[in-house]
Length: 512
Image (cartoon, rainbow, N blue to C red; front, top):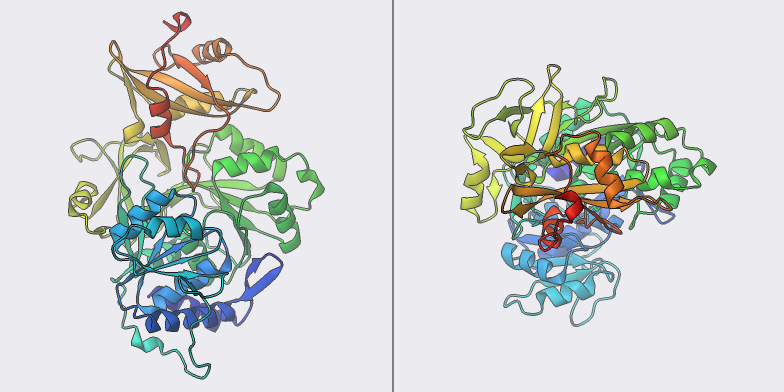
């Protein structure tokens, strides 16, 4: 099934209903089809052909979803780009994918214009909320005759055709374009739906839609007949108001958002009984945070695991099964996983190794990057670069990124072990642990810590706390207090940035 069929089937199955709520306006599933058909016509009039790449770069708004469906219906390929990126990063992506068109909004237009300024082949810029002028087109100014019907049979798309090129965050170098086919995305949405026997309800769109998340939430809502309340920025007060007003049943978030909701001082003013569960991903969820959220709001946090190359879900907890804190659940249907050593040999239950996966959801490779493709795809298996183990019940536990593993004096140290301990301290809001080069030990352990409001704690006190619970070789040799942890647009902590910040630090005599 191609992605445009999901919307068509949604309308056939559920009839017309409000699909998106945004700023006191609502847009039905039929509105989405009408707008996307018009966008498809306009793109074709601009000369867009099958396989052309179109960048979508703007904050959350209904037009992101309209554009996705319009691009697919024109036969082109979606390239979601987070508007929070630097204009140089946007420039790289537009140039690398040779985008013919960029769809954006007034809030991101300046960045986009800067990004394309020095390109030899400049893409057409389409803006959703500004009138057409000599430099840009308005998204809705297609000049298509009202009585000219959109003919979907013209598409001739195949399930193996690339639907999306999703650029990785680039935290360890230049971002790579992950190609995802219609089969990749549809199979992942369908199997995620089957994994939890998802039912019709209302969800929140608080994560960036111009990312694989936007495709996941729209595809899942198409399948379940659900609605989404979309926000153009995260605000705990607005989230609680929406849960109460729209009887929200579930939503996806990152740990930083879950912590912000838990810390919001006026949450008890809202009726939140409709909320059943929250899906957490993108970054490790401290176990202490999971328990505190459940205790305060009565809603389960279902931690899951995925990555762009898997379109994106690999594993997740099931609502009606045992929730194991610290685990990311079990593999979803249609996804096979193994834990292997450096030679690719499968390890026994409970042993830590690299997680590999295969299934219809796995990318065929990186856009115009055969070398990188061969590094992660071997004999149909995706090598994720994540260190994990599986227990006797088949639950996966992600230990850390392979590249984040700290080797001190020949011993492996997994940063998450230290981060989980720090999260239990009453003065610690969140933390991130990295390794820095050390001539004597190979690497040393450094922890960045964000204090809770009005809490007082010293470096020495935290180190002594760690020493009372961890072996000495795992204990941080330096604690650095920081106002906030650096993150990319989907909430992943930028450990590369933290390691760079720590390059010139000196260990004090106290820790030697």
